[in-house]
Image 1 (cartoon, helix red, strand yellow):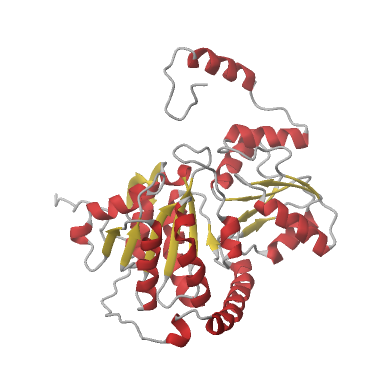
Image 2 (cartoon, rainbow, N blue to C red):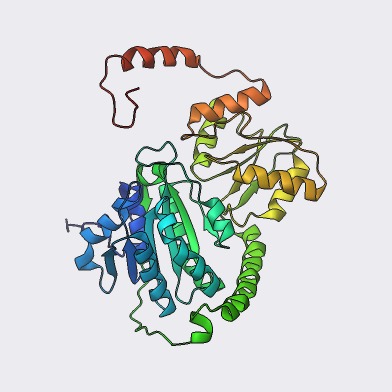
Amino acid sequence: MEKQPKITLTSDKPGARMFMLGNEALARGAIEAGARVVAAYPGTPSTEIVETLFGHRTSLGKMYIEWSVNEKVAFGLAFGASLCGARGLAVMKHVGVNVALDSIMSAAYIGARGGLVLLEAEDPGQWSSQNEQDNRFIAEEGFLPILEPSSAQEAKEMLVDAFRLSEEFGQPFILRSATRIGHSRSDITLGNIRLDSSTFKLDKDPDKLVLLPAVARKHRVLMIERLNKIKEAVNSWSYNNLKLVKNSKLGIITSGISYSFLLESLKWLNIDDKVSILRIGTPYPLPEKLIKDFLLNNNEVLVVEELEPYIENHLRALAQQFGTTNQIHGKDVLPRTGEFSIRKVTEAICRITGLKTPIDFSLIDNAINEASALLPFPPTQSLY
């Protein structure tokens, strides 16, 4: 029997499957997208993405990979690649966005030529970070569209799409990952690798690239026009999908990894066919047409999103705009801190619907407390 060649991260074998870390899947996404420049500053939970690319650098052809001295330099390098017509990827953790913010805001005004993607990994629960910063607010301030995956497989596919969409609309895109996306493992189906042997150069154009006030004023108008086109388009993107159940007593809106927790929770409660679900893959800009259809179909609504009530607040404003009188739940039944879990989502649904939880969670809590007293303090737990 002829021995089959080993499948690796750089194999051009569409349809093949590999068991990998979520951050490895994101590295594969950069490969499939044909990213020519990848620059990053290390920081958990994003580090393994570029570490993985470095580990395969001898088989990555013309891809340039760099650990930059800080996040601002990393983003500037990716932005420079985009201005030359190449696909540029900047990778950092959520707090690194603060360091690069000046360059990020300028890039949003100027726009993208080659695909430009900021891959930022957030850390709900602060497992390795000084805060739980929610960068959806920064994206909205900077007119930067977000793609937010709910699984490692989707993270890979979204990264590929982010480059395509950045070029289609001429605007930088953000891919918002999280600890539970990047540090989980699953089977990943490989896609096609985009091969690009083009040569790239910067066309000097001060009227476009030098943000003097007169130039920036023109760019702001163009940036808003680009965002409005994206705002209209997101209603038909596959990452935003609406499942309406006729006469459902509860409708749930969710985004990111929370969607995966929600699906497990509904199965656990045996109500997965009784609840309307709007799954959002673009928290900015939101798919307002889908949201309107959702609100008209459901009187009582639960928003399941980690960290800040970003979608929840926008939903309340849209409900007023659409003239609906929905009862909207969110952070009244779900925490504003830490990661979600199947348990947290299940308890929230039970509080709203009056259903009983499938098991007595207090028994688990008691067992955890007893066991914890016998264990050393983990590095993420306070001694006080």
